[in-house]
Structure formats: C-alpha cells, structure tokens
Image (cartoon, rainbow, N blue to C red; front, side, top):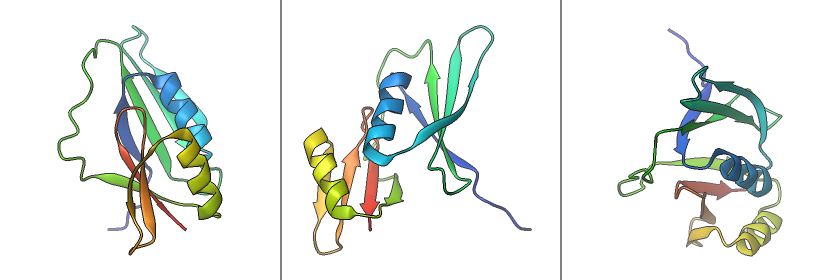
Amino acid sequence: MKSRFLHANLNVMDLEKSIAFYEKALGLHEVRRKSATDGSFTLAFLGDGETDFQLELTWLRDRKEPYNLGDNESHLAFRVEDKKAAYALHKEMGCICYENHDMDLYFISDPDGYWLEILE
C-alpha cells in the first residue's frame, strides 16, 4: 500500500488569531474553509503554496477551556529559507519557547501553546 501525507490537525481556541499567527510567523495562507451548517465548528486549511501538505485548524464553538497539551512532546517542523531572518521575526513576535544551539534549531509556540520546530 502507498499513501501520501495530506494534512495535520490542531484544535484552536481563536481561529482568526491562529490564522494571523501562522501567516505572520510562517507565511502560511488559508486555502479553504469548511463550517458546520449549525455553526458548531469551522475548519480552516492553511498551505505553504509549495507543497500539497496542509495544516488544518479546527475551531469548536462550544469549547471554553484551553486544550490540554500534556507534556507538549508532539510538534510540527518547518524548514525556512533564511533562519536568521526567521529567528529575528520570531524573537520580535515573542514566540520563541525553546532553543537548542547544539542541534541548530529552535521552537516557537503558537497562540494555543503548540510547539513548532524551525529548521534551515
């Protein structure tokens, strides 16, 4: 059997705030959206414009408490063209949450606390 990655999902508390973060921090753009007819959920799919892989952000109307991310050991990784410029932007945004200089990588945290690995 052969398969292909399509998307990964993250549940978010504030969909528009999350979309704005991913656009500014990583250059992702909304490519499509699906909402329940009763307004109970909205799915926003973000893409990088270069690959078919998408990030699905799910907003649930009735969710009032932040999501429990456990030890936050799961993450998504992003390759950037200019890590020095990305680092400066992320530093300015105040979203860098962990740096590993020995491995030449760092992590940023999105508005819901999900960690995103940044590599060159």
